[in-house]
Length: 140
Image 1 (cartoon, rainbow, N blue to C red):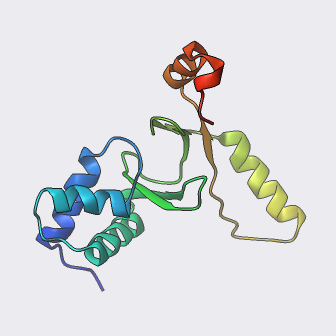
Image 2 (image 1 turned 90 degrees about the horizontal axis):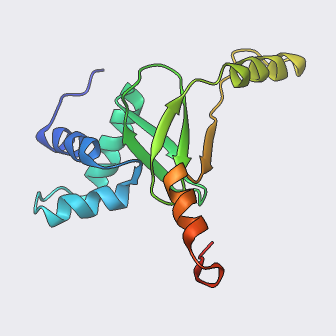
């Protein structure tokens, strides 16, 4: 059954598009609350789940295990490089990962295998900023 579009889902979609990088449902809700939209946290979670299921949003887990979302600019299966410091996300092709996943699944008798691979690190700008910080002031 197709879900109908609501103004709340449209507003969540707009806020997600306006966000830089990946964002949690709580952070997105805080933005919407600050704008006095009246959209509740449960509605944000439902809208994000719907957007992720339809391919309009990427959903992944942060290194801390929290679900984070981003408006998706690419349809179909893809992977990301994500900066742990500033949140910059770059969509990447990973043909070697695709081949490895299929080989590994087949070697263990698995079929119809799916996978999620996202790489977290520091982007070039954040790496340069970190290198310029005095060692005693770094927060890891």
